[in-house]
Length: 506
Image (cartoon, rainbow, N blue to C red):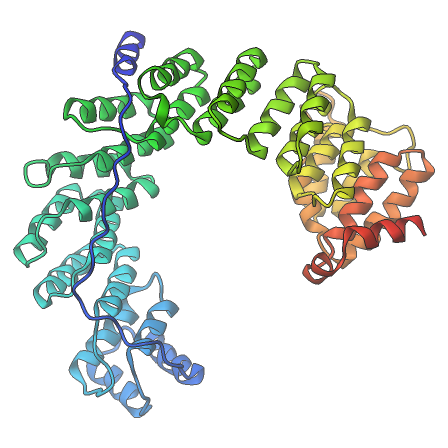
């Protein structure tokens, strides 16, 4: 297996990025949306739900007795009310087909909407019949192909996926590589890459894949963590004389990094540097520098950073943040601060790199000072900032403080109880009391989310006072700040950093 993997990866070489032009639909556009009476919509949907198994005569009679104006938008709203139930929607479709409604006419939009509902309900027989009717009527467009292939692929109807293209070709929708590319992209985004590969290879005789087609298959297999299949698709693309884009290269390199195949990733990157240096941009350098810093290879990361600057590529805050973290993780604190001082407008990525690096060195107090500094400079912390700092001060599983009134249990476990999450608090306490069991990782994210309200302001203010009395100023500032900024959406919009500082001083 290892030999085959190396053989596949060694064939990866650099190519230009290819794009495709989206096809334009020849079908008429639907009428502009018009207001729908919600009371009328509710009445119709109620009848459709209650009478969905009734005979046609009874259902049609009840719907006609309402004497409601029905137009294109009304039908779409009915479909939205039953997103996973095909019967009410299809029965309503049949009713409109058999009765007279002057202001209603079907378009590709309305039929695709109904087709999507039928597909989500997994009624494959009705779905297939509906597709054929749409093809005969000439209402098939690119959206129909995407809905059709996603539904059939999800149901593992692979033969029907291929047959779909042949069927539509017979109805006048000729084989089109642009349409195939849209379908493949949609399937890969939905984690249906195996099905997408089957369709592409089976249709090769009629539709020749492009670099864009294979590129999405490579990315799809990378997302699935199958680097062997991704390499096979890459090599198949190269054998056919097609060229992968930079985004495909970056995806493959990133996947290799994630799989701890650092040497293979760097070989692929070196191939790009040697053969197609002009194609290397900020995104590629950013990716490689970030992973070098994570691996502790700070000397190589600095070389890449210098090379990037020499080529006239300006580093963004994400790249600088990775470099700062890498320097701090290796204990090069002075160099890290020198890099930060040279940044004209450091962003949150730079500050996060500093905080992460300092916390790794167990300098929680210094990390909190960086937190205060970023607030002064108008860089607003995110939820991730607070979680990092809390973990740095209290640990991933929580630590008991010196003062029993302000230790981890009273702040967070007690806070869960006050938030009505007593079950979660009980589970944590039970495992804590049983010495033989590993204490689970505390979910700071959920805890902070529970108190992202006005109630949280009072809670964190009270906690902050107790922490200050116990001499735990850093933790007090973090929690008080969170309570002030995460109260409500209106307070987050209106409350500024300067106002908070003035109130705290007062």
